[in-house]
Amino acid sequence: MTPALQAESPCAADAGSDWVASYRTSGLAVIPGVLPVDRLDRIARDMHCAYTRQLERLGLPAAAWSGRASLLQNMEQLLQADLKAYLATTRHSARLASLQQLVVSDTVLSIGSALGLQAASLPTSPVLHVMGDTLRIPGGYHGVATHQDWPVVQGSLDAVTMWFSLFDVTPHTYPLQLIPGSHRRGVWPSCITEHTCEVDPSCYDDEDFITATVSRGDLLVFTGFTVHRTAVKDCAGLRIAASMRYENTAEATFVERGYPCAYQRTVIRGAPLPGFPSIAQVDCANGLTD
Ligand SMILES: O=C(O)CCC(=O)C(=O)O
Image 1 (cartoon, rainbow, N blue to C red):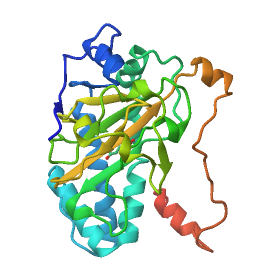
Image 2 (image 1 turned 45 degrees about the horizontal axis):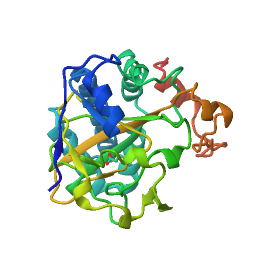
Image 3 (image 1 turned 60 degrees about the horizontal axis):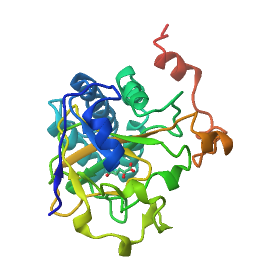
């Protein structure tokens, strides 16, 4: 069993905090109680709204909001009814304004500042990780294998990853596992796979990892070079977390390399549905009915 990492000190987003020292030496830290729980609730509620609207569209019953269980129920129901709608809704959830607002909130950006980020920039929008034993998609994503984030993004060398969980994360609800000190060994040997750039398994043992348990409101932060993975063994239930990368506009090699970014934006031009929308549909959506 891997040792557990827990929140270390009352939070203050200041460079003298214990968690900053822990971040520097081990490449990771859990900052306790920094995220407003009402904001986390808002994201979960907005997700619930999206799954509910899709169930209604399909003429299926939906559970009214009553917390995590109702969200899971609607997600399961939609997955069973219509895989395509489930995947589209889950992708859409990552674009929720409530989530985007949290990841660039003053509190969160001040944590980046405490870690030395200047004019912090965002290579991409939040990535939402939904884990659930009843939400498995055959042949699909079910956790991320052992990897480092920097090789995937290739931005500033002091980039920070922050991991925002909507709910408590225990050792049995798909926590992240990380290797303390792994950020001091540069880029680890790896190969590109479908979901990531997977570290060569011969480079580590299971005992090297610690398990990051997170209470609601805690924030897990780690460096772009910290080796980590999703724990899947003996896990069940629903875990939803968003990960977000922050880069330092002033980092010398980032400046020198002319701000590379591995993520590219793709825009699909053209009308997806010929003839849609009618003028009446536009008016109706905008509350303009005569
Ligand atoms: O949340 C997860 O399960 C994986 C997150 C992760 O590894 C990442 O965002 O780099």
